[in-house]
Amino acid sequence: MNFKPTQIMAVGKSVPDTVITNDDLTKILDTSDEWISTRTGIKQRHIASGDENSTFFAVNAAKDALSKSDLSGLDIDLIIAATSNPFNIYPSTACAVQAEIGAKNAIAFDITVACTGMIYALEIARHFISSGKYKNALLVATDTNSKFLDWSDRSTCVLFGDGAGAVILSESKDGTDDILALNVNADGNLGNFITMNLIGENCPLVEPAEKGVKKISMNGKEVYKFVVQTMPESIMRALDDAGLEPKDIDYLIPHQANYRIIEGLQHRLEFTDEQVIIDIDKYGNTSAASVPIALADALNEGKIKTPSIAILCAFGAGMAWGSAVVRLRKGLK
Ligand code: ACO
Image (cartoon, rainbow, N blue to C red; front, side):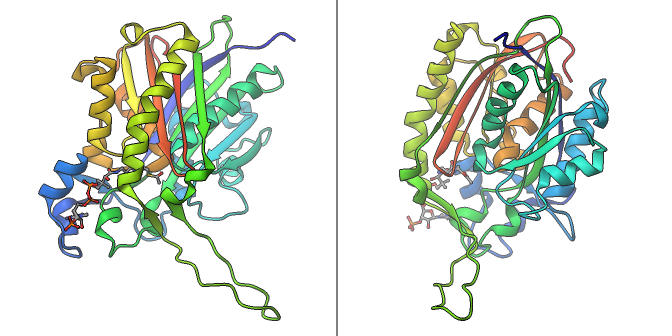
């Protein structure tokens, strides 16, 4: 079989207008700007307000990415939405996006991989494209964590923000593959590190189920220890698969969960500050949206020069984690 190469066509994003600073949080929590910013690097986060939800941001991010490409909704034949807190379980977020952008030729489905959603979506979409059957894929990662946080749990609620990012992939016309390597992993034995239950209620004719807590709960220390060990291994494996070394890479666009984790990766790769894209101060941890939002902003603001080679990496609940080595072509927006 003749495998088709993948081209990264465009990147988009959408975040809520409402900004909540660390100082704002001191009105409802026993916390401080000093604690949050020194432990995490976060200064503020964008938070959904009123009826804004995951679908709303997904649609806006998708439209933003489409506007930066030569494609219309009708050209898209695959939509994958990565979300862990969709507005509806069904219809899927991907189907809602399909309707809003007029992508009537697309198949559409959601995946749930928490913060690693976009890396998994890249892995899935590149195989759809490489089969030759699908030509243009829209990947949207969207999370409104704020609706599922326990706003009295200061160890977790200060960490997250809301938003969506989108990436368009197409079958490459010139035979060059922009996905140089992908390394994805999961370990369900560590599922209790980060959880968000969605427990319904049993039929009234049977014994009732225990009432669950439908909020994000995290063992931050265990996540931290796990990530500083496994993330560099994943990156090195992806580099190895691509036949590259850290010195061949121009940029690192990591999941924005904690500044200290990012700093550790930077030292391991021996990258300069300019090579590492950090926006955790502005957005906090936006889960699956974190990597595409960082990439979209860095391209827009000229922090990333093209053409270049970048590592994208993410980790989160599951536990699931992964890395991609990608080519960012000249003029990519
Ligand atoms: N403000 C003030 N004090 C606080 C706050 C707060 N917001 N939160 C916790 N504290 C206190 C604690 O109560 C504790 O006090 P004590 O010593 O009196 O008990 C003290 O600060 C230290 O708390 P720790 O939990 O030990 O703080 P730590 O240094 O481990 O930092 C943090 C916590 C920032 C969460 C860190 O562990 C971390 O970043 N972990 C990784 C999280 C992550 O990467 N998650 C990504 C996945 S997200 C997803 O997949 C959905």
